[in-house]
Amino acid sequence: MLSIVVALIFEIFNGIERLLWKRRIRKFVPAEPPVFIVGPWRSGTTLLHNLLCQDPKASYTTTFHAVFPQIILTQSWWVKPLANYLGPSKRPFDNVRMDMDFPQEEEFGLMNMQPESIYKFFIFPSDFDQIIKDELFTGELPEQKLAAWKKNYHEMIAKASFNTGGSRYISKNPCNIPRLGLLKEMFPDAKFIFIHRNPYKTVESLYRFILEVFPGVQLQETPADFTRENVVLLFEQIIRTYLKDRNLIDPQNLVELSMDEFLQDPTGSIRNIYEAFNYDNFEEVAPIFEQYLQNDGQSKSGAYETENETIRLVNLYLSDVLDILGYDRVKAG
Image (cartoon, rainbow, N blue to C red; front, side, top):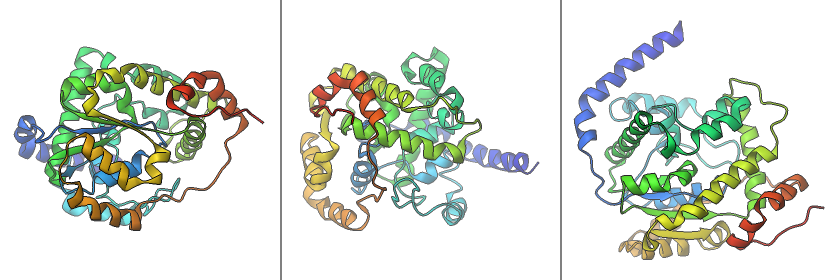
């Protein structure tokens, strides 16, 4: 009964926001081409996103926006402090600081607006493989669902710009990797950053991450046959799709870098991105990046070994990808 009452109250708030902002959202056009960070999960995308969002020109989806996309512009003045008080101060899987105003992956907000997202697998782990099959390639959705998805994504970017005030929307969303053509169609001059990590480490980290998230959100029991192979097959689809579709992006609008390069010299990597995209304010904002790196710039996830099963699966499914991305092959012990 309480859930029904709360849902009805928030539906009233949703209606108020639609009434007050619908016209401005519909007419919104980004002042600058958006930037899409499309690295796979567990590949340094969060730090890269957080850094780029320190630029005052950046707009971005906040954590509050991702959780409450329908009321971000009208009710945040009272809901956000409450959410900050009740929510965790750090991400449990890597100890990155959290706050309702921090940059966040917009896929979570999209999932709160419409159902087409592979992140349903966190809630329904028994259907992991089927959800990946049905939801990974958004551009293949039926026409009506695709039109709704585009409308909702446009709304996410518009509200992010109104909320954070920047002119350049910065997205971090691994789910966008199979949407490169779709995003290019929606935003012809968009910029893309692909950051990658050693596949052995990526798969191991992603597998552990998913298992850590399942217990807190799942509505189904995690199946006994959910293994690293499920994860490596998802990663294989993602990485092969990127390698196939990256030629859709104009070379001057694409930057590729490895996580190792980025972590070795974050400020230098950001400088290279600014130069590649012809942004002229790097020297102005460099001190802001440096301050962020000193205060918040490193995660503190626990150390772990890459299991032999992960090594075996990566060698089985991704041996050619290792060569393409420039990573040495490892033999299972």
